[in-house]
Structure formats: C-alpha cells, structure tokens
Length: 95
Image 1 (cartoon, rainbow, N blue to C red):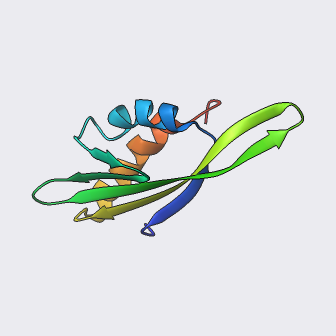
Image 2: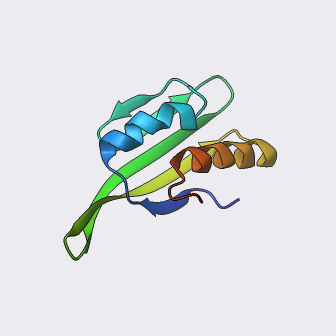
C-alpha cells in the first residue's frame, strides 16, 4: 500500500466527522483545524482534510475535500484492514 494515501471526497466536513468514528473503529482522535490524529502506544494515523473548490454540475453543488491519510506502525495486513473499513464507511452509491 502506498503511504500516505491521497484522494478526493465529495462530502461535507460535518458528514466526514460524523462518519469517521465508525470508519476508524471508534478509536479516539483529536481534531485541530485540517488535522485529525490518533495515537496509541504502537501505532498512529493522521488525516489532513483540506477543502477543495465545490464541484458544480448545473444547479448541483457538491462540497469536496482532499483527504491525505498517513498510517504509522501498521503492518501490511493491518493497514489493508484499516483501509477496507475506512473505505466501507465512506462508500456512496453502492460502491
């Protein structure tokens, strides 16, 4: 898995933060501006959630964010499991 992972999401900041606890298996995290972090004794993750210009299609306006996710201390299998869960909770439109 390439780290850090960088992708765009059409989601509001409020919705991202509402869905995040389940996506990270309810691990405690802190939010400070664009930075969201979790640290424990063995491993950590960090998300940078940066606002992008809205996507406009006719009268439809979608908020967008760039998500940069970094994992530290995760083995390959654990990192893959983390990402599968993360992506599952943010999947839209049936996958």
